Image (cartoon, rainbow over all chains, first blue to last red; front, top):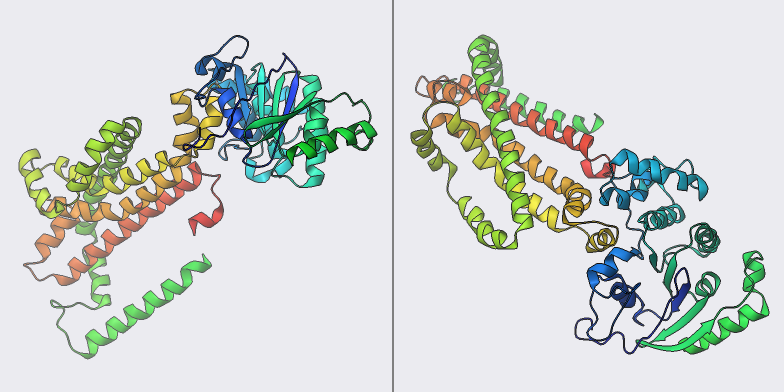
Length: 234
Length: 250
């Protein structure tokens, strides 16, 4: 319930460990609410959420890292210090936190941006740093809320490929929320369509992903899944 | 520096006009001195004014630092305790309705005639804008940043240190800059309530002697001191808040 309004109703979903589930739907379908509930930032009025057997909000909070819609980078920190934020929060000294975050910059194609403040970074770079920050929280579950919603189409396509590679290198359990059906189908193994707070369709994405992005998104199997998802959204 | 020219030119024109009018109207110097008389007082009384300035600078700087320390401490306490905020904030507002001119003599009786009552007067005048701005700044942290911090191992203290406090710095400096312009006036009030040194004391002594030019000279120095403090605080902001867009400083 949000401001007395029922946002989600009878949503039942299961995400296997290191599995990737996408949730698509229109704005206002209850996608972000679902992530807040899973993360333990809010409590559901009814029902149960369990992560690795942990049902209490504090326990869920300890297992989930949330990447919010906006990048939410701290303007007073360098890219490296933003990425290392969770490590410092966990009690590591700043030097040690930096030392642990730095190798990921090189591995995920961000070398050279470490010392820049967010104001000096492009939108695509900022989202990458925000993802790195979420990854470095070193939690089993990543909750991605419209990670590329604020980007232009070209940058978004680039980052979808980048994220697929990053997740292949650093496998986690992922719950991705987006209004972009293509994005969900590209990145996830299963996609749920949410409409008016209910799950109206469940799609298993069994398309080959080893081809380049353009080959994947134009394959007949992919197009058919896309069609079914869009139909369900209505 | 180019921005400094228009106000400087206007100021020079006004000073010139002042000199002309006072001379043309043959106003006696003890009623209203010419700028040149003020300038010669600055030179002739430089020993006296210099010693007084040192005394007042000490009061202003120490009192101001005292105000900043107390204000930040109170702001942080108010930030962490909603109950304290509800109880103390109205009282702080009420305290600002007590005229400082009346507070100064009471403080002099209470604390004696040393530097202490002056520091307290300066602090009382300066701390309020800093507290109010700091409390507002700390509370206006983006809730989305706080939620993000909570999912990234961020406890209450980490959220304060890494999100709320740095985010509040621009607001804290706004308050500190306003307070900087009050500090000199506070020091003069403190000296008027009982002292034997300082620019306020010089003004007090010059008045019955009709040394009007010296009063003007002392006031000029006080303005310059307030301006210097303001500039120092602005400089400190540039060093401590380097991520602020340049336009903010205009």
